[in-house]
Length: 198
Image (tube, rainbow, N blue to C red; front, side):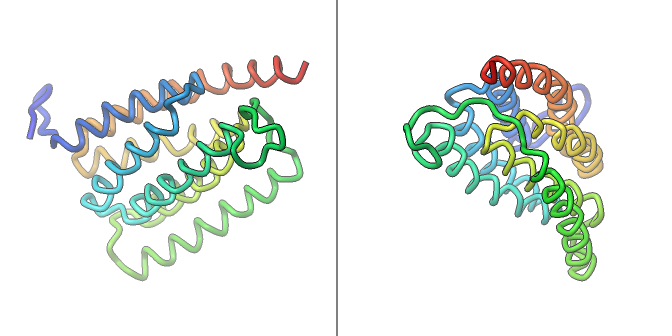
């Protein structure tokens, strides 16, 4: 355990937060190492979430780990690209937004019910809702759609509360920083999308 500003912080929570900070900076910049950092961060947060009793979010980290492999291949043009070129910034087609919203609602209800039934999650509705949004956001992120940042804008404050309540203070602070990057990310990625669209 580390003591920072009077708070007891586990080593794994601290290291996970540092990796997470590098991850969000790389995501904002759409950097080359983004997906590699996503893989590493997902691995750390599988441990942190499960040990904190946030089973839906821990399972989402397993999903994020797998989606990181997929996203890496899509962004590099290995799959979903005839020219095998790096994927440009894009915008989510309007007809898909309704499907994504519906999927979020259905997943939230399903996870909430499942977590309540299992009785293990401390906050089943928040855990289920944030997990559902994270699933949808990762799909959008893998497609390099700029609107993915809006999903994360909702997820981050929920995760701040959950991590703070479980004593994972470094992660709670990290998710406050993430919220700032979400705002910057919307602006930056939309601008880059508009430049590609010209």
